[in-house]
Image 1 (cartoon, helix red, strand yellow):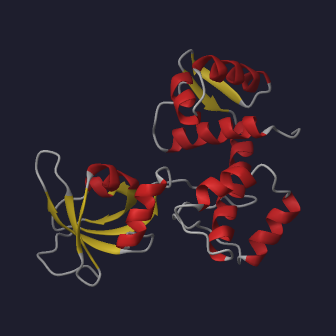
Image 2 (image 1 turned 30 degrees about the vertical axis):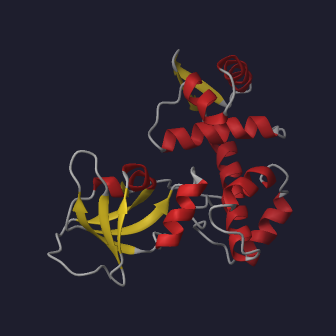
Length: 230
């Protein structure tokens, strides 16, 4: 495959992200995701279709071809490795690594990627819990259950936190809602009110709907009558 431009890679990664978040992949959705006009997105999709990186199962939808999926996974791998490197080695806060990796991912050579991977001990998750695609072999991009799906009394183990909103990510980090954290849903307020959670140590916090939709993981279906998480 010939070298792709940064713009090509951004589109492929956006299609990958929308697909695996379960969102409809349309021209309008891509334009919104990338902050471009619909005509610009339409023109780029035509070019990607001509190079057999995307295809249209129907006039409204877009999906990656097998070739496009491989190219997208390469970009996603570089991005998540860079996030991990920035967080672990340079101590960049987890709410800032995404924006930095967005810039660096297009300039990272295969050789440097392999050196970073080896230096980090071949990690399989980035700071937000997102799985890092392997160089070869199958990749699983499962998101797990959103915290918004948990009910009062259930325990929840955080596995992934969306990095799409840096300010919200910073706030969740300050609370300790990080990959690996365990919490208990103490109360779900009615009529769209907040979800109250208890973290290890007994700290109780109210999380609004936008925050509970950012946090994904595993729900323990067994209800817990009381007590702190952990």
